[in-house]
Length: 295
Image (tube, rainbow, N blue to C red):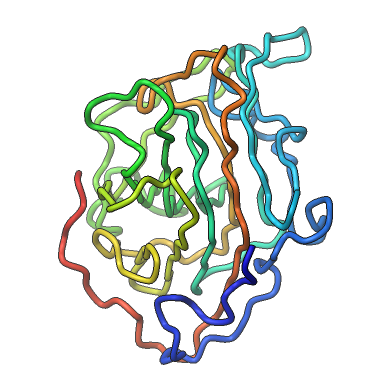
């Protein structure tokens, strides 16, 4: 694979004065994840049901990280609510706020999602930036979802000192119409105040390697594909806390559907490199992107 970019693809002349941020920069050489930067420990969350995260499904090989999905039957050690599938995830050991982040990746080939996102959760604040959530083409699909669809959202589940009903006015987001509901494992699917949508790209996300980026500054979250802005810039005023970076695969039966276990393992979700920078200039790359996302 080619070496990672020295500057963001969307700002090759460095108009913003970017400087590298090493804790979230990696070319994934060697035979394992760099344990000082990345972890496969998701002990506080076992994965989206029914797919169970398995560290064995995260493999570093030939200069990239491969996140696979497999058919598997539950054992007595599995938490309640999980069966039929094992999935994959890894996350950064560092947390940060604001910057430009870029990956070169190819999504997996099934309807088990391939996602790049950031999240933070403590006792009073829970926020999330989904740079992309995608699916593959080798699976039955709903007519409204396909492998060319890049879905980007921000979610504010809770914000310290702010009542849920006040989140839309304060954060420029929209409260989910669904209510928080208990799950089989005793946890709760929590309603969120969200913003974002999905954009049809001129290529399949699982069809080849492409570069994706996100600029997150004090006012906006802006997503890029192959250096071009995608969708609308999202308000970021309530996304000020340092959060961690995640890559994962999840079963999403209500959104992307579930593959036939007999078709697994699929072609994995692959990440060639991840790069991160901090900006010297306060002027963002994107001040406003005309709305083009599918709600």
